[in-house]
Image 1 (cartoon, rainbow, N blue to C red):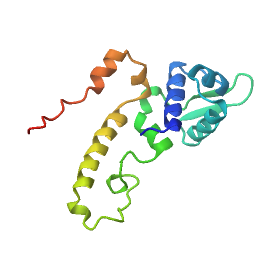
Image 2 (tube, rainbow, N blue to C red; image 1 turned 30 degrees about the vertical axis):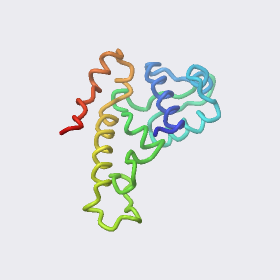
Image 3 (cartoon, helix red, strand yellow; image 1 turned 90 degrees about the vertical axis):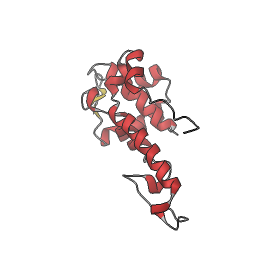
Length: 154
């Protein structure tokens, strides 16, 4: 599940993408997106250290995207704020850890299914950019349309 930190980071970055290169102060983003200011300050600091936003001090300062919105993916943001996309550690690509209770990882059905889930989630998040989030919602729905669910009888 996406954490509140991840949700706020996504909302703030979409807000900056909407601002079209203009710097925005944390207080303005927080007010517009209904995010606690102190929490957003910490999140923006992390995003700056990760190279997703640039900051400037002063009256006309604030935050802006460090790269164009079409080069920042939801996958990058979620991994930064929430860590692995995999639901279990042995199915993670970037944060792999063997499960303590698994006698045979290669035969583990749970690992196989969760790796498939991770792959699907990763594929969607890694191809969806901040710029995509600003597109017409019907256009985004077509882009993200999931394949038909499998028939329970097959």
